[in-house]
Image (tube, rainbow, N blue to C red; front, side):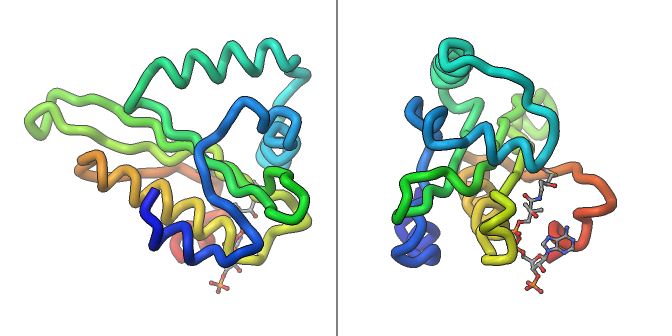
Length: 142
Ligand code: ACO
């Protein structure tokens, strides 16, 4: 992550890659504002985390941590698709963006999208795309 991207957050929030301890820092609670998460044990979370980590350059899961509490208050993923077209080009898919209800409206969602878009461009994606419900369309337009 570029310092310039992260520094726009100010001192109250930290933008960083997902880490194992985020299970206890509430990342799954944040995702529950997006959709059904289900009952995921720490063991299962760890297995999934290790699977994603092993696929270097394919999955980038980032979180925003609230400095005062250490809790995760935002999350988002960039999934990188390898194509044959465009000379075996890369396309980034921005997925599963969520901000904790108590922190919505503070421009954290915009920061997550900006950071994922920045990562996609830096690793050479010729475009980054996302799908969303009509309900959120105006947010993504912005
Ligand atoms: N509809 C229209 N405008 C919106 C919406 C919305 N649902 N949400 C935010 N905005 C606007 C804000 O008013 C703001 O406008 P401004 O620039 O004129 O002030 C701008 O978008 C930026 O808003 P943020 O403060 O950065 O948004 P926030 O941090 O609250 O995050 C998010 C927005 C991620 C949609 C959050 O409300 C959320 O987590 N919702 C529940 C989960 C969800 O639906 N996630 C998106 C799924 S789609 C996907 O993941 C690709």
